Image: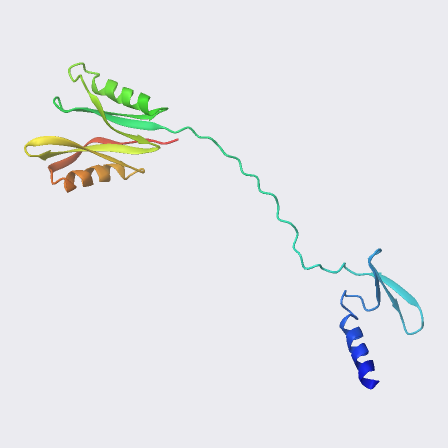
Length: 173
Protein backbone atom coordinates (compact mmCIF):
# COMPACT_ATOMS: atom_id res chain seq x y z
CA UNK A 1 0.00 0.00 0.00
CA UNK A 2 2.85 2.32 0.88
CA UNK A 3 4.47 1.62 -2.48
CA UNK A 4 1.24 2.37 -4.34
CA UNK A 5 0.90 5.67 -2.49
CA UNK A 6 4.50 6.65 -3.31
CA UNK A 7 4.02 5.79 -6.97
CA UNK A 8 0.81 7.88 -7.16
CA UNK A 9 2.52 10.75 -5.35
CA UNK A 10 5.51 10.51 -7.68
CA UNK A 11 3.33 10.58 -10.80
CA UNK A 12 1.39 13.56 -9.50
CA UNK A 13 4.61 15.46 -8.80
CA UNK A 14 5.74 15.12 -12.44
CA UNK A 15 2.84 17.28 -13.60
CA UNK A 16 2.61 19.75 -10.69
CA UNK A 17 4.31 22.66 -12.44
CA UNK A 18 4.44 21.43 -16.02
CA UNK A 19 2.66 24.49 -17.37
CA UNK A 20 4.39 27.07 -15.14
CA UNK A 21 1.41 27.43 -12.84
CA UNK A 22 1.74 26.49 -9.17
CA UNK A 23 -1.97 25.72 -8.96
CA UNK A 24 -4.78 24.93 -11.37
CA UNK A 25 -4.19 26.22 -14.88
CA UNK A 26 -7.31 27.17 -16.84
CA UNK A 27 -6.37 26.96 -20.49
CA UNK A 28 -9.54 28.64 -21.79
CA UNK A 29 -8.79 31.90 -19.97
CA UNK A 30 -5.03 31.55 -19.67
CA UNK A 31 -5.16 32.08 -15.91
CA UNK A 32 -3.72 30.21 -13.00
CA UNK A 33 -5.84 29.63 -9.86
CA UNK A 34 -4.16 29.13 -6.51
CA UNK A 35 -5.74 28.80 -3.11
CA UNK A 36 -3.51 30.32 -0.43
CA UNK A 37 -3.12 29.17 3.19
CA UNK A 38 -6.12 31.27 4.32
CA UNK A 39 -8.43 29.64 1.75
CA UNK A 40 -8.49 32.65 -0.55
CA UNK A 41 -8.51 32.07 -4.28
CA UNK A 42 -5.79 33.92 -6.20
CA UNK A 43 -6.01 34.24 -9.99
CA UNK A 44 -3.15 35.46 -12.12
CA UNK A 45 -2.05 35.22 -15.73
CA UNK A 46 0.84 33.08 -16.77
CA UNK A 47 2.27 32.78 -20.24
CA UNK A 48 0.68 29.99 -22.25
CA UNK A 49 2.67 26.77 -22.27
CA UNK A 50 5.18 26.42 -25.10
CA UNK A 51 4.39 23.68 -27.56
CA UNK A 52 8.04 23.34 -28.55
CA UNK A 53 7.36 24.30 -32.13
CA UNK A 54 8.82 27.32 -33.84
CA UNK A 55 6.69 29.77 -35.78
CA UNK A 56 6.40 29.03 -39.48
CA UNK A 57 9.12 30.64 -41.59
CA UNK A 58 8.33 33.78 -43.52
CA UNK A 59 7.44 33.15 -47.11
CA UNK A 60 10.23 34.14 -49.49
CA UNK A 61 9.16 35.22 -52.92
CA UNK A 62 11.63 34.93 -55.77
CA UNK A 63 11.31 36.88 -58.99
CA UNK A 64 13.00 35.78 -62.18
CA UNK A 65 14.39 38.81 -63.91
CA UNK A 66 15.00 38.22 -67.57
CA UNK A 67 18.13 40.09 -68.57
CA UNK A 68 18.85 39.86 -72.28
CA UNK A 69 22.23 38.47 -73.27
CA UNK A 70 24.83 40.62 -74.99
CA UNK A 71 27.16 39.38 -77.72
CA UNK A 72 30.51 40.40 -79.13
CA UNK A 73 32.51 39.14 -82.11
CA UNK A 74 35.84 39.47 -83.89
CA UNK A 75 36.19 39.57 -87.68
CA UNK A 76 39.40 39.18 -89.67
CA UNK A 77 40.81 39.41 -93.17
CA UNK A 78 43.92 37.24 -93.00
CA UNK A 79 45.37 38.35 -96.34
CA UNK A 80 45.12 42.06 -95.55
CA UNK A 81 45.80 41.66 -91.82
CA UNK A 82 42.67 43.58 -90.84
CA UNK A 83 40.93 42.82 -87.54
CA UNK A 84 37.92 44.43 -85.85
CA UNK A 85 35.65 43.67 -82.92
CA UNK A 86 32.07 44.44 -81.96
CA UNK A 87 30.47 44.37 -78.54
CA UNK A 88 27.15 44.72 -76.70
CA UNK A 89 25.04 43.45 -79.58
CA UNK A 90 21.60 41.92 -78.92
CA UNK A 91 22.28 38.76 -80.98
CA UNK A 92 25.18 36.73 -82.26
CA UNK A 93 24.17 37.44 -85.85
CA UNK A 94 24.26 41.19 -85.26
CA UNK A 95 27.57 40.95 -83.40
CA UNK A 96 29.20 39.09 -86.30
CA UNK A 97 27.65 41.44 -88.86
CA UNK A 98 28.92 44.52 -86.97
CA UNK A 99 32.44 43.08 -86.60
CA UNK A 100 32.58 42.31 -90.33
CA UNK A 101 31.29 45.80 -91.15
CA UNK A 102 33.96 47.40 -88.93
CA UNK A 103 36.66 45.19 -90.44
CA UNK A 104 35.63 46.14 -93.98
CA UNK A 105 34.98 49.81 -93.15
CA UNK A 106 37.98 51.05 -95.13
CA UNK A 107 36.80 49.20 -98.23
CA UNK A 108 40.17 47.73 -99.09
CA UNK A 109 39.98 45.00 -96.44
CA UNK A 110 36.94 43.16 -97.84
CA UNK A 111 36.08 40.39 -97.48
CA UNK A 112 36.35 39.89 -93.72
CA UNK A 113 34.91 36.91 -91.92
CA UNK A 114 33.83 36.36 -88.34
CA UNK A 115 36.55 34.56 -86.42
CA UNK A 116 35.16 34.27 -82.89
CA UNK A 117 32.30 35.41 -80.69
CA UNK A 118 31.32 35.69 -77.03
CA UNK A 119 28.05 35.77 -75.10
CA UNK A 120 27.94 37.72 -71.81
CA UNK A 121 31.71 37.87 -71.59
CA UNK A 122 34.84 39.51 -72.95
CA UNK A 123 36.85 38.88 -76.08
CA UNK A 124 40.32 39.96 -77.21
CA UNK A 125 42.76 38.97 -79.95
CA UNK A 126 46.49 38.49 -80.09
CA UNK A 127 48.71 37.90 -83.08
CA UNK A 128 51.86 35.89 -83.27
CA UNK A 129 54.31 34.83 -85.94
CA UNK A 130 54.45 31.14 -86.73
CA UNK A 131 56.24 29.66 -89.74
CA UNK A 132 56.95 33.20 -91.00
CA UNK A 133 53.22 33.94 -91.08
CA UNK A 134 51.14 35.95 -88.61
CA UNK A 135 48.24 34.13 -87.00
CA UNK A 136 45.33 35.38 -84.89
CA UNK A 137 44.52 33.95 -81.45
CA UNK A 138 41.26 34.78 -79.72
CA UNK A 139 40.86 35.00 -75.98
CA UNK A 140 37.45 34.72 -74.36
CA UNK A 141 36.71 35.10 -70.66
CA UNK A 142 35.53 37.30 -67.85
CA UNK A 143 36.68 40.92 -67.51
CA UNK A 144 40.49 41.19 -67.32
CA UNK A 145 40.98 37.58 -68.52
CA UNK A 146 40.38 37.75 -72.27
CA UNK A 147 43.70 39.43 -73.19
CA UNK A 148 45.67 37.05 -70.98
CA UNK A 149 43.87 34.09 -72.56
CA UNK A 150 44.65 35.34 -76.09
CA UNK A 151 48.35 35.71 -75.24
CA UNK A 152 48.35 32.25 -73.59
CA UNK A 153 46.85 30.69 -76.75
CA UNK A 154 49.50 32.40 -78.84
CA UNK A 155 52.32 31.17 -76.60
CA UNK A 156 50.93 27.61 -76.45
CA UNK A 157 50.94 27.51 -80.25
CA UNK A 158 54.67 28.27 -80.03
CA UNK A 159 54.24 31.49 -81.98
CA UNK A 160 56.77 34.27 -81.59
CA UNK A 161 56.18 38.00 -81.18
CA UNK A 162 52.82 37.48 -79.43
CA UNK A 163 51.02 40.75 -78.84
CA UNK A 164 47.49 42.04 -78.31
CA UNK A 165 46.02 43.49 -81.49
CA UNK A 166 42.39 43.78 -80.37
CA UNK A 167 42.14 45.02 -76.78
CA UNK A 168 39.64 43.33 -74.51
CA UNK A 169 36.07 44.36 -75.18
CA UNK A 170 33.24 43.12 -72.98
CA UNK A 171 29.61 42.41 -73.77
CA UNK A 172 27.85 42.14 -70.45
CA UNK A 173 24.12 42.35 -69.68
